[in-house]
Amino acid sequence: MFMRYKFMLIMRGIWFVSQVALFGLVVGKMVEAAATAAGINYFQYYVAGVTIITLYSTSMFIGYDIFEEAEHGVFEYLLTLPVSRRELVLGRSIGGGLRSFIYVGPLLIIVLMLLGLSNPLHFLVALSGLFLFAFGVSGMSITIAVAMKSGDKYDILIGVLDALIVRLSTTMYPTIYLQQAMPAYATIANFNPLTYASDLFRWGTGVEGTLQFTPLIGLLALFVFFFSFTFVGVVFYERRLEGGSWQ
Amino acid sequence: MRQILHVIEYDFRNFFRYRWFIIALLAMNFADLFISAIVFSQMTRGVVDYFRFFAPGLAVIGLFASAFMIGREVNMEVRREVHHYLLSLPMTRTELAIGRVLAGGLRGMLYMTPLLITNFALLGLPTLPELLVILLALFLLAVGISGVSISIAVSTTSFEKFVTARGVVYYMFFFCSSVFYPMAIIQTLETRGLAPLVRFAEINPLTNGSDLIRSFLLGSPVFSPLMLLDVAIFCAIFSLLATFAYAKILMRR
View 1 (spheres, rainbow over the protein chains, first blue to last red):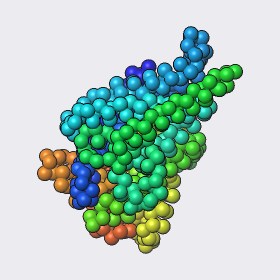
View 2: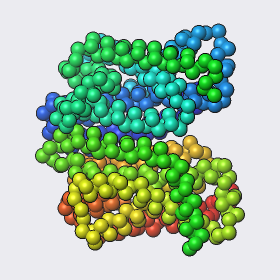
View 3: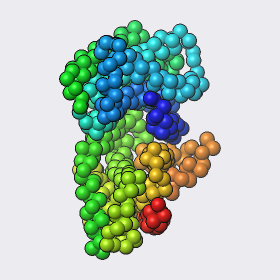
View 4: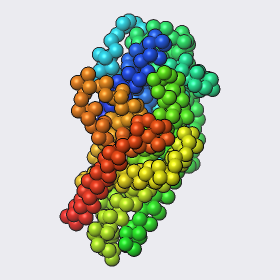
């Protein structure tokens, strides 16, 4: 199903390259002094952040499938399958996360070539965190999709959510600058799964030597995110399937 | 002229059908300004006051995105063969094409208005002649963008190909311009062998459009008539291309 989005995937690829090769390079020059003061190489910092944004946005694609299925009557077919509804949602959430990894995989290899890999064990820990993150985002996407009746409204809400969740995280800038800009931004960022995923990824690739939280806390936060949204997704999905309320 | 006004009215009615989409787009633009730009201001202290620098760029981004929306509709009409109906209307193909290009630009201007007002509120008001020059430049820019969008839209019946081409154009125009960062910093890319990108950024109408607003609201860079000329040339080339392409290509389908 995922490969039907080939043009969307090409678009994401173009977005990634232009973000890294143009925006990352130029902004890296602009914030050179601040980045040095914060002890980071901004280009590397940004490349890692853009990788997480790409993983986030591709994991969100699953929501569009939910609407397609409702539109084309595939829901009825899914209900006839010999699996429980719980298994169905869990499977979709994990499937959504896994397929986004298939897409991000080649980008991840390029990113690793750019950033290098200082400690393979750290990287494996970070990678497991990214899996939890991708599954959690898919669960969140399913939850939002089944809670809404209109595909257009879903598209709009996802756009607004995307704008806020990405900007209020440490994908593009370190927490210290969020704190200086407005303490409320830093507070929100501390509860944002994108912050944990991107910081853990930077730690795993060696871009950042130290984290503001321990890797265990990071993994735990991503597990809580994954668990809550998969659980909420199951409840919402079950309710929506009852009595054909998706129609 | 009356026929052209009818086409413009038709496109404005369509535009308001997307009001939630427009509100979402505005929310994203304001998130860029009031979150990202404020944080980057902290990171660029001593280099540039990024918040003030970015605000005019944001108005141009909004203008670009909304003026480009006409292409999506034109492409949809081509795919669903609505253009047959449009071609049957009592007006010449040229009037129809001019109306579509102008409507795309005017819709961009309408969408950009709250962003421009935010600029005036944050950075101060320009004088009346300066305001007129800003509005003229932005109108020319919007019509040119609408022209680019329509030219791409009528070149393909595939929505996916249109979306991909739109993505390439968006990212080239946005990231290779002074919308996000000062030209002086882009010029440092020359040392990395990226001179063609620097040249493109210099002639990019988005660079000239945003720098023109900055020249009046921030005093830097210094205003040059070449900024207006650049935008006017862009507008002339792409509005003519779109009018020609729309009128000719639709007849062939």
